Image (cartoon, rainbow, N blue to C red; front, side, top):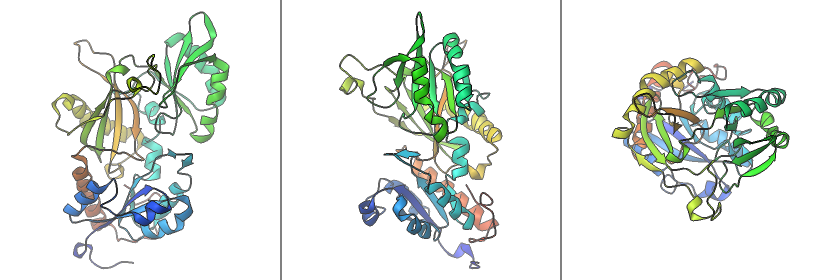
Length: 371
C-alpha cells in the first residue's frame, strides 16, 4: 500500500485513445489532438501522459494505466469494425485496483447508450419514446406504432457516427412498404418491405441488447445543439446544421450541398443557450442522476448531450428533445472545456486523496473511486 502523503506529490493522469502501432510509438502530449487537455492539466499542476490503445497491446496498456492515479478515456464504441469488448473489462480491472477511470464502463452502460432516452423519458427533455427489448417485441409492436404515430427514428443501443440510426416512414396506401434513411453519412433513402427492414435491424439486439424508438422531430433541419458537460456543470455548447436523416439534395449524397455545416462552438455563458444551461444544471442532470442511480463523483469528466429542437411551447419558446448522450469519446470540445476538465480532475483527485489510499486492492470492481 502506498503510504506516502499524497499532498507531497503531483497527480498523474493517463489520457487514453485508440491508435495503431505507429501512433503508439510516436505519441506525445504535444502531437496529440488532446494537447489542450494536456496543457490545461499541467496548468493545474497535474502530470498527464499519453496511452495509445489497441487490442494487440492490451497487456502493455494495462501496465501503463496502473501507474496512474486516474485515467481519461476517449475511445468510440465502434471504430472501423472494432468495439470496446476487450477494453471495457481491462478498464474495470484497472479501476478495481486503484486508479479512477472516466468514463467508467459501468457509467457508459447507464448514460452513454440509447437506452438512456427511454429511462429518462419522463424528464423535460423526453419525447414519445419506446424500447424493444427483444426481436419478438420489435416485430409485434413497431408496425402498428409506425402506422399510428407517423415517422419514427430507430436507434441501436450502442453506436456512433449515425451507425444503426434510421428514419422510418410508412408509405401511403402501402402498409407493408416503408421508406428508410440511414443516418450514416452518404446514405440514400430506400423503399423496401417493412419485414425486410426489420430483419435488417435484428442484429442490433445481439450487440446492444435493445432498439430505441423515438418520434421524428420535424425541426431537425434547424440543427443540433451539443451541450458539453464536465461532471455536473455545463462546459460549453456546439450548434451544427446536420444532414443525417435528411434526404440528400438532387446533387447526391456526396455533393457539397449534402455535407453538414461546421459545428460552431460556444462557451458555457453563450446567451442563446442559457435556458438550456439552466435546465441542464438545475433539473435534467439531477434528474438523470436520480433515474440512473449515478452520484456526482461518478459522472464522466467530459460528456455531452445532443438536443434537437422540439415543438415550440404555448408562448413560442423553444423546447429541446434529447437524441443522444456521448460518454465514451466526447471530442472535439469548446475552447473552454479543457480548463473545465482540469478543474473536475482536480476535484476528483482531491476527493480520492482525502478518502482513499492510492492502491486499495481489496475493493470489488465498481466500488470506490470510479468517476
